[in-house]
Image (cartoon, rainbow, N blue to C red; front, side):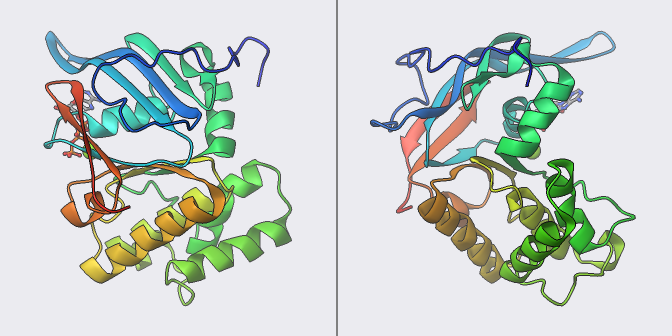
Length: 255
Ligand SMILES: Nc1ncnc2c1ncn2[C@@H]1O[C@H](COP(=O)(O)OP(=O)(O)OP(=O)(O)O)[C@@H](O)[C@H]1O
Ligand SMILES: [Mg+2]
């Protein structure tokens, strides 16, 4: 990480607008203030995020809801440093992602954030075990350590018998579970999961949420999960909803 990055602490941007309730005394892991994002296709412009304010404290589990096209994936991409906001501040683990270069953002993401993409993004030529190892190898961890942890994680998501299967040899739900194991390999502080149960039967989906909740309890991991699944949202103590490009907030289920 270069010295050019703003690594200062919390800015106190805990305004009173939607989405900041329930933080309590926890230090913020996510601080978003006044974020706007539009996509332009030709001469058409889609205003997706129109002034999002959100603070998420360490160890929170936040479910992100909103109708299809509301901007959930867009927001997660901004939090992961995969895209940049047109306006406003996005600070994750005290790092200002707006001032990070793409390579800095990528290194930061690999070390601090576990991302589970809506469409998995597995490497087609790598088997399940190799896919899970990738972030750890990028972080220069030793092969033996990577393989041992990847096997443990794949077993934990119920894929102990699928180490050598490539993505095309796995079902959608199995690919999703490989993606979840991959997101966990570097012991991230923050997990951003985009519809992590979208292709799973309800029992497997419950097991995945159990796994995420136990990581939260064991390691104080912060979870932000975009979901249409009310079973998942009911597990989150805090539910926020994207409506008309802004965050609306309410307390959720039993966590
Ligand atoms: N790269 C892009 N270029 C142009 N428009 C885009 C792009 N990515 C997303 N959009 C548009 O932005 C809006 C928000 O998309 P986004 O994927 O964030 O929604 P979502 O809430 O995740 O929806 P879903 O629940 O269906 O996954 C959509 O209307 C989409 O068409
Ligand atoms: Mg989406």
